[in-house]
Image (tube, rainbow, N blue to C red; front, top):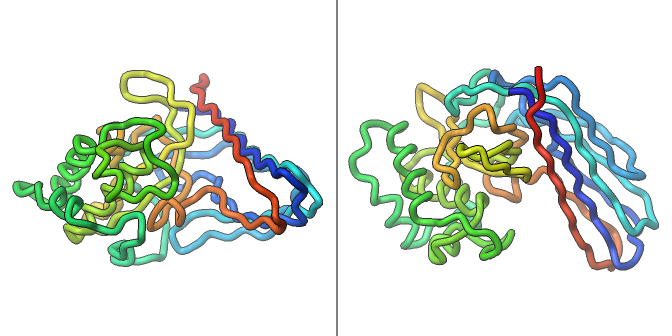
Length: 269
């Protein structure tokens, strides 16, 4: 599948800020499931700094904006070919040992509810089957609902609500997988459409679980599937904050407003 992606993030400030420094993970992952043909990142008024590939294999580049400025837009556009690898992250080079992803963080910390959910899977044939069943359990326990959670909602809180969005599903799956001694991590990216063909023009998130002998395998508990050719992978981390496509620090006392627009379209090859 060939996809064209347009992604714009606009930061507005109620008074001018002096400077802004950003770290961007907005370049698609290099692995067998996707091949990038064109990719452009632009920050209005920004100066591109050095870039590097981190231990997880993600490409990170720095940008600086010198003020005073009241609005900054980060624009991403490009074309990428994707193919279904059954969720397996084949051909990806990284240096971090999988066991590092057994460490929990505040959003993924296990409470009694998550511990019970992790323990509810009792008949797994192997680690891959266990990961599939845990993903299904999370998808059944947390109904996809917009607007009921926020960026700081934890996996435990989302499970208690019984509702959430893809970030909450990913955090919950990471939590229960780690509880069962399976390394797991958060993945940020894009999704072209859901399995029923419904448009999903937005940034997306899912989880990857490490299965011995197979490697990292993606699971989208929110959509009850593994990532396929509809998915574009950008970056990974211990949780949503660690894997955030855009991280930055603004210098000033202004209040920030954020607007995000994403368009993912299939185009003819």
